[in-house]
Image 1 (tube, each protein chain N blue to C red):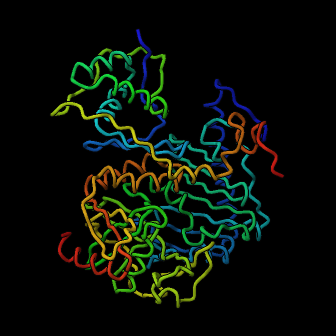
Image 2: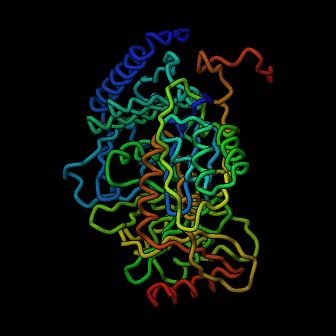
Image 3: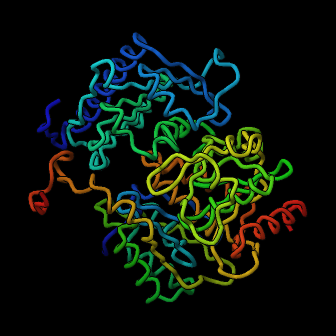
Length: 140
Length: 360
């Protein structure tokens, strides 16, 4: 059985017809999912087997390689992550009229600068403020 | 709490709740100190709601409320009571952040207790707390030294606290401006440099109204989306070339605000700051570089990308609520791209004709 994946619950998301807008607050990055990528996001609302999702989308006419690449993009951006939870068998996959459009996962980091320049992020992730990471460069 | 306190996963929930209780005790302490030595009270508009501000330092409170909209009836009930406490006068220095690390948001010195409705932020460099307890409708701005008040806090005071408070209502703050003409509002979104403030200033100079150029309140409380002014402030680069800032603003007595100049709209154009207006359109501002301004339909998703993330990243701590309400707004009110030409006055002429034509 292939690994199960589920949508990252710390990602804020809103859906429109044809587009899902997501925000990763901690990284300062936001995303636009269009075409079948939005359908994938909905499919991973609950734990699903990657293979089962691929099979389902391919059975409904989607390009298997494109779907696999899009799942890879979702994982790479930490929008979807592997889970130990047992995958649900049914796949929330309704085929749009005209079939699946090519999946598009677009990441926008133009606002990440707001987060990156904030010194509060230069802290020890385990201990929190005001302790700096052990490997933090001495700038004094 | 000790600076080196650690929480294991097993007790992190309890430790997080303990931090909430410690912050509530801090809030109680600060409110008590301010009430005992209050030298300032005022009541201000907060969208459809009102905020009572009590401070122990009249000079600081006046400075921080200079750009807020005073409510007519100062003695009427308020929805939020905000305490402004200075350590300078009453020897009340706020304690520093030393909460055990029980949340990823603690990396931002941001404590969120969703169940209790408490949010708190500590600025380590400027030594001030911003706290909002939605359950008791109380807020706190407590700064050690008034000379450390950041310049942006004068143009948009208490925005974190207001954002957290409004997160529990039908309203939200948005990083946007609003232009008003004949009782209808057009909300302008876009990142810095996209022309929001320039368009708002040109609109005011042309006799139109505004609810602000940078941060506004919107809500759907009366069956239709309405924009509200929160701050009576317009910021601009004083040395911007090409006459893009109307003389109305450049000739006014401005206060320095970082690299920008700050003027109150009510000082330069009395009556043009509009408290509330129904929204007829949302516009994503872009600088086209062309001679003329154009207005074209925009997909809702693209509009949300222009409105939601910039607001969420600017106003931390209620991001999901901000995105949800911005999405509801975008689903209801039509969205357009306002491709601004090189002449702001021409852009206002185009926008005025568009509004008078009912959005055509």
